[in-house]
Image (tube, rainbow, N blue to C red; front, side, top):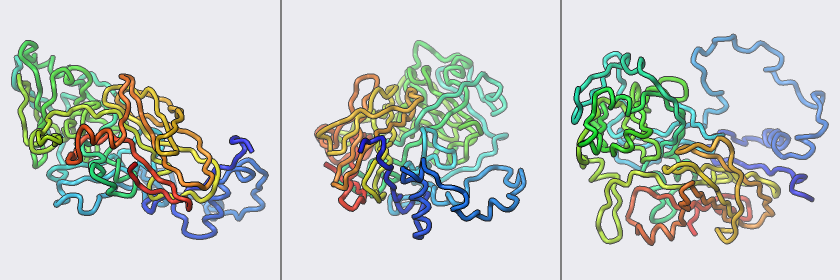
Length: 429
């Protein structure tokens, strides 16, 4: 039987998945919908099915939900906190359910959340952005001022520098939501930082860095090189067509494409232009890389090329032998994804996956490869290559350079083991 004629297998999603299988009747319905073959292209008729109540009555009136919300049947598709990860819930992380999403855009309500002092609720009419330092004319902008300036919209990912941090030493968490869920991608709208720096007349001869400061209780501050500031950095107020959500920095945040997420300072209130780095708390005590020789490496800005298979992935189960789409996400802080390779035998053999349009710089890219599961154990991996030629490393290769005491910037190849019963586990090989 050729692959084109093989039925698609069914996947039972992880416990936090958006689609549960609570009863045999539900399982039969899923088999009809997803198993392929006659059910997908056959001759089933409406007479053979019970007509559900929603097809026989009036639904809710138009405008019943003035701000749209997900179906109640999608209630399990939410951000989740990993218990015990941080000592306080005000300085913690809520992970994006990557295993439940399609395409490359993360819905605003599911974009991962990382705060350092809780989430402030800011009145936009009182919020101000100050730009000072090595500038000809320091200025204070209101939100109305910023909204009147020329705007741009760009699609970019934001990834926390600590994404996949728990996997440095050994396997620590079961599902892709927790291994890679400090990652999201959105269309950001705002004013180019270069526009504002030109407006205040920054000192082009002396300026080397800018300092971004947030209005949260931590007054989080981060240094950004002037080259980045003048390239594609945004002072953003929009996310996926609407104003930022409070947990994403409402009413104003910095977006530094391709750089670890902490640099995209939320609740932005001040930008200072200077001639040297500031060496702030979040650049010395945190977000630095402890190397094998005991030295600490600062200012690892770029998020290197990385990928992960989101289906099949940890916690899921393959219910049938047959054809499965292996799909996932790839990204690079250096530009576009050029290629993604997929292996089902732990990296001994690789096949080139199909990249789904659009393929944008410093954005998520969706990939897919069809695979026939015979019921034998398998080791699923993806390996991304970006347009600079950088190849995503194996965990062993990364540890040879970085050791095992790091926290940040783990871009190693992820392995999912499919056992003979179809259960998918997080492993390292």
